[in-house]
Image 1: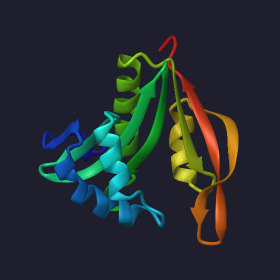
Image 2 (image 1 turned 90 degrees about the horizontal axis):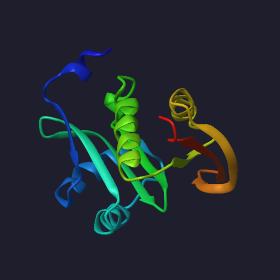
Image 3 (image 1 turned 180 degrees about the vertical axis):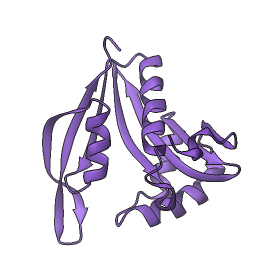
Length: 157
């Protein structure tokens, strides 16, 4: 286990509107087609599960998930590029899965770019299975990119 995960200065908390400047800076560095500030604001406004990990006052990871009608949908899971590869994505995903179960979800769904091999590996290692494909779902530099749809049952866990 990485030293970062044992550091007492690393803490999880809900995202607040005041966090969006830092989140947007990470989002722009992490993705060629980042979410907009408006999307994050809307997620907060409607009460989605929005959690982050911070080291002191610096945000290093965040996730956004909706939960309704017994299903959760993981919408965004991001680790700041300089903190990737240290287990924070897995840690954030575990937190969101726990929250999904606490909110009564029986299953969690997500879409991931077919080219995002590190994320696909993480999700598969956490028990997600491919259940579909959304053709042309994401914008790409050369047109559109497909999304793999993954699902995880929370029943019996």
